[in-house]
Image (cartoon, rainbow over the protein chains, first blue to last red):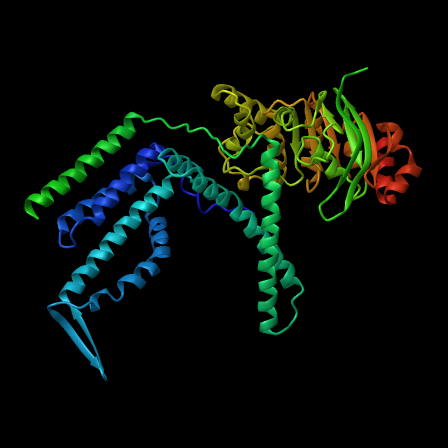
Amino acid sequence: MEHDFIDRYSRIDSFMSRLDPRVKIVGLAALMVCIVSTAPAALPAFAVYGAIILVLTRLSGIPAAVILKRMLVAAPFILMIVLFIPFFRGETVVLSRTFGSVTFSVTREGLILFWGVCVKAFLSLLSVILLTATTDFPTLLKAIEKLGCPKVLVMVLSFMYRYIFVIQDEFMMMRQAKDARSVGGSRLFHWRALAGMVGVLFVRSYERAEAVYLAMCSRGFDGNVRTFHPFRVTVADAAFFLTLAVSLSCVKVLGALYG
Amino acid sequence: MAEKVVEIKKLYYAYPDGTKALSGLDLDVFRGETLGIIGANGAGKSTLLLHLNGILRNGASDAVKVLGRDMTDKNIPFIRSRVGLVFQDPENQLFMPTVFDDVAFGPINMGMKEGDVRRAVEEALKEVDLPGFAGRSPHHLSVGEKKRAAIATVLSMKPDILVLDEPSSNLDPKHRRGLIDLLRRLPLTMIIATHDLPLLAETCSRICVMEEGRVEADGKTADILQNYPLLEDYDTGALLHISRRSTT
């Protein structure tokens, strides 16, 4: 079976996908830091961030629909957090409703905070999607390793990326084998069978891990996974980084002067 | 007489649960030959293969000698760089996120320089007919491609001896044909454990029949594959039927 959703768009050849991933990570991280450190009331600043992201999206060649779809995946989590913010205690009550003995009041401070969290989460999410959609996962891993992420963590992520689909296929095949013999039976019985499958999957993954380790030892593994980092900073990378840095500094300076 | 590259004397091995896998096995492999190993499931084929690069070791370090060296801690890095072991399931053999990283894994561990590693990877991928696959993820390959990529991961180490466990399992006829052609053109000493007798008939110069952890019979391919009483003993009539067809 083919699983392609992680890297589907990272093979589009565009300005963004050609950038050195380290420059991309540092640049977009800087953008996110600026976004989250801006006061909710600074509307022009958010407009500039939005414009930057829009331009980068155009440069990435990724269809807007794809980005929106990926946003939807994260949306419920953000919603869960922001839902109660308008009801925070504050000075000025904008709206108040009483249901029996419980009174809900929306405050002005709560609303401003609500807007701030929403717009920051939305823009940060867009930046992350832009990074992950234009960089394939193995390259991303090499870049974070090069930027100082602990090797063990990179190794774990790398094995996860390699084997999550293998395990998914195994589970799918087990489920098909179960369904092929499932004629009737109570719901409880099916849940029990499913629990058993999870157990089997764990044991199988454990055994596979041992087999993989043996295969690694056969090829001289000594506790360190070494790979090459074929990254080179080019003129395009420098231009991208400088433009981003100058725009963000301008926003920050102007914000400090007139904010 | 050609040089002995593998020398096994009275090799015993029992798994931790007590199952006896090898009981006094003797075997010599000579440079340049292709040796087939057949035997029923549980005869000890895979266990034997795991001894060839020291993944499994019994107490006596001189029971297995590779290229004249005993299987000691000091020699194991050298032996592992000379013996390329390809496991049956390519999912286990291909553990890195990209084909390039996987094929480069062995050479980098051997301490080769970056330029040499890149050249070795390129040559190995070309050898197995997968040029241009370097940037791909293993989970995007077909079964046949995975099998060949798995072979490339050890070819890049430029081994003297290539050891393959069930190389043709799960392959469709077309990919199996491609694999046989590949094995025939590799100029290495090879040890192939398989149930695929026609594959052995086409690739091997010599065949060993294993039973209960010992070598029961050892001889030229044609002699073994035409020894019907022996094969009947070793396995079912179906295999015999295939071997008859392929040797005539």
